[in-house]
Length: 458
Image (cartoon, rainbow, N blue to C red; front, side, top):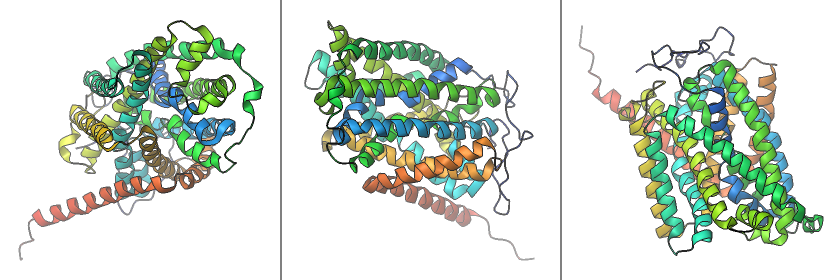
């Protein structure tokens, strides 16, 4: 099955990777894609999906987790990750604009390094979602439980969120994109309200001691915060859905970097300076900021905000990962049964059903095995870090050497290599997934060879 939008085909073993050029087939004109499907995502909707994918649940939970790991010094890790977002977002936006394919990073790695490495990247992203979705849903569940009580409230909320997101995406990206735009506008306003309302209660004395756990603790904080900034690659799987990917993708990424950077630094700074020592122990820091700033029924208000924010994040990731799963089925990296829906404009319902089922299974296993959300976060960020490493390495081979995007890819590759080292033992999970991808490829090739008819004698 051929790619839906006539993107350049995967290179053969003897092909040499080449830099992208203006002549590369890309989807530049508005209207239907070459496959005959109308594309749906506008610049505003694409920006909203970017903001949701990156802002995500990190803003409602990670300020507290990072503060617990490194104290006020965690603010330095926030600043470093915001700075890294600029070249990272630019790199993936440049690649997506040149090669708009539902395979996303897996497509770029295929062009640069071949099918085996692409399968590893695709599996790492696809199978990171069933670990990340339960963690995201549980973060929101903690807010709901804090507002309404109940022994099983957090778990019930998590199950409902996963099912609801899967149901929305079954209607297609045009529906989820419109919903995402409204959610993002509302949530950006809410976060600004929380920061502004609590700002008069900020105290510089809460910055001391600045590094209570030592400077080495910044590594763990940075490894946790990768969760907060994962997402710059997620929208690449939807590149073929943009009306004008060549221009809209870089613009959407640029606007999202500014919005996300400002909001993350504002919320993280307010969490430390307003909550002080409580920042490290608060399961719902956003609710605490609202309670201090405006009082009243703020826990309920924060619970609603947390659910909507989490819904938006999971919506963006499920949309991108479902498209990726269909592309992997199309390209032979996953069973061909998943390939339906890989074309731009089609809904990958089979891939979506697999994602939803695995996410619900992982959530149930977490409950039975008493696995906390922090462990799920680190498992997920380990996968994303490996995806970033191989994706930025592919950019160095595909983008024009010396161009601004190429220089950004160099900076991003060096920074991601440092994050990889900080992930420690949690890198075992993506390595295991990578071994699974390579094993599947070998078995698939062996099966194809076994069923191939033997040549007849002359």
